[in-house]
Amino acid sequence: MTQENAQDHANAGSHTARPQANGAGNAEAGEANERVRQDLIDAIPKLRAFAISLCGKPERADDLVQETLIRAWAKLSSFTEGTNMVAWLYTILRNVFYSEYRKRRREVEDVDGRIASMQATPPPQIGHMNLRDFREALMKLPNDQREALVLVGGAGLSYEEAAEVCGCALGTIKSRVNRARGRLAQLLTIDSANEIGPDPAWQGVLDHATGPGGGR
Image (cartoon, rainbow, N blue to C red):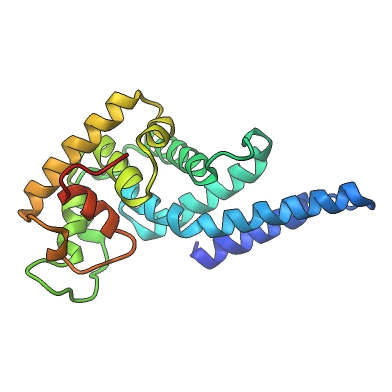
């Protein structure tokens, strides 16, 4: 499923869920549904980047995003208005991934490193490294460290929000990020994020990995 398919699903879901009725109350409900629909669409690129960081396969990542949108719409009543919707969606996506991973464990060859070879070759980058090197290094991190670094460094979540997404203590998420930073910098053998070309999906993670402290 492509990103366009995911957007189409978000559009379709909003229309089917909108009640057919009259009056000001129904108009307000329609506007609320429209806002939610747009929020879901806006979150798709971030969801896809997070999904790829978990599974390493763009095609499977698209399926994870689709399933996340389906489940999010079905349980929309559990979302607390005014909180971080993207963090809420990350939680759903993460649960979908690990649920499917457990079911398909025998089919999954490796989630910790070797699937990096399946990644599409990115365009040439300036410097002695390229994005492929970075992605391969990222996929060599343990699952828990990788997702923590991506959530804090790439998705821009606070440590508190990342801990909630991962279902662990605040101290645990900080420890995972710190270990991931050290290991990633070691694998990349770099001192600065400027040594690799910019990429919107990964530059935040790279900055966080090679910066003096990072995080919030």
